[in-house]
Length: 263
Image (cartoon, rainbow, N blue to C red; front, side):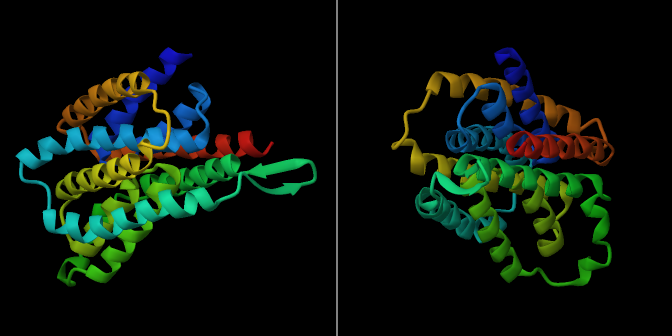
C-alpha cells in the first residue's frame, strides 16, 4: 500500500506542474488514508511537501520571467499572516471533541477532513467549469482590484493553515480576474505564493512536533519528480482539456471522504 502512496505522490507534482494547483488536494488524503497519519499532522506534512515542490517548480517560471513579485507581496503578506494565525491560534483552539450526534462523535480530525472534502468539491467545480482565462476578455479594461486581492490572500492563508491546502485553485482565478495577468504568469506567481505560505506554515509548527524527516524527503522526492513531468507535459498539452477530467476525479474523492468520515 505504501508504494501506491508514493506513486500518487508523483501525481501531486504533476498536477502542480500542469495546473499550478491541485497538489495539496491529493496530499492530505494520501497521508491520512494510505499512510495512516492523523489529520492534524497530515496537514503539517502537506505544507512541507506542497511548499517544497511548488518552490522547485517556480524556479523554471522565475527563469522565464513569469513571476509577478509585486503580486507575490500584495497577496503573500496577508496570506502568510493568516497562515500563522490559523496554525498558532485557531487550530490549537479547536477542541478534540466537538459534539455528539447520538453515539457518533464529531471530532476535530473528522471536522478537518470534512472541511477538506468540501474544499475538494469546490475545487472540482472550478476545474470542471469553463477555463477561467476564457472568462475575462471584457474584464481587461478594468483596473486591478488590490483590495479584493488582499482579502483573497487573507482567506487563502487561513485555509492553508487550517487544512494544509496551498489554495492554488483559488489563487490562480484571483490573479487572472483581479490583477489581469495571463495564465502562465498566474501559474508561476501562484507557485511562489503557495511555497511561501506552505513553508512558513510548516516552519511555524515544525519545532513543536516530532517529524519523520526520512518519510517526508522520500515523499518529496517523488513529488518533485512529478512536477518536472508536469512542466514538461504543460508545454505539449492543452491544460483546459485535462482539467475537467481531473476535476471529476477530485469531486469523486471529496464525496468518498465525506461518506468515509460520516458513515
